[in-house]
Length: 387
Image (cartoon, rainbow, N blue to C red):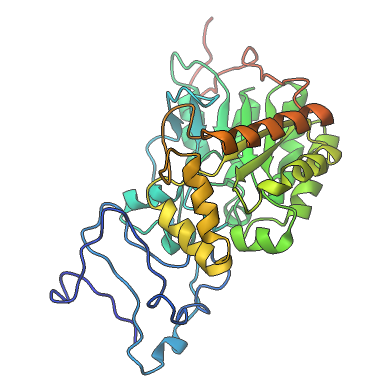
């Protein structure tokens, strides 16, 4: 039987959600994971409460083996009627000031995803809810066209995929990216895409002509060449081989390709850094970047649960090294430090990346995207500008 403890139903046994957002496996430590079959193919181990919740829920087995009858966790998609689609930011350590997120949540299920805490804003868990209870914005293209046509709009590169992946599996059904890219192409508006899905190659027919006009580039995230590790960390993302094939297809189509070796995780995938760069260069990528693992808010307990479940022999060491690069904390959100960390280990990762990139020939040429070609969309029933 599935019990959910809450302060309403079980006032004597409920626990207040702790400020540290400590997660729990579906069962006490040392006992079998009783929901292992139900969440097969998912990244998070549990559905821990978000930081805004006043109660904590956990799954308990009452001894009648009725949990065996529970169905697998299915992906549920809800429609979100957004009022605007372009999100603005003024962060000093990132290269863009605006972005588009056609989806909330991400089915890829990466245990380390720094976007997981955003699901707490919806009253949902950053754990399994984040990768199975998704939101789609079907009006994204229409809203984008409207915003690009607003008086005084100043064109700058729009980043897509910097929060949740725009080419996650449900994009095959909803095809929002094709609609968005068509609007951007028609308006000659620059776009930079970040993804870990080979599905991006579906839109080469739109991206290649945009790239020829200096309006598009694509970055693919490559975390490991080890299929077992990649499958465990990113259970529903494209395989490493597929991502490399996508780089090759994009590059051959004339689209500038960047490889993002991100996240770099000490004692787990950092030893692959040079091999990742080499494989990406052979596949056509000519620019490269890296980001150190980030563990903000609920991401830390979710990732640590994943470590204990998949690599228990390394879990303590991984977190020890991580904290050595974050002033003893799981995470440091300071501008300029959150992406790179600090201390000797962080410095060595940065130096290795620089030397390998230079040796291979990465980052010799930058590809700044053009804004001078922009032409504001004309609204349906509207009229052209007289100037």
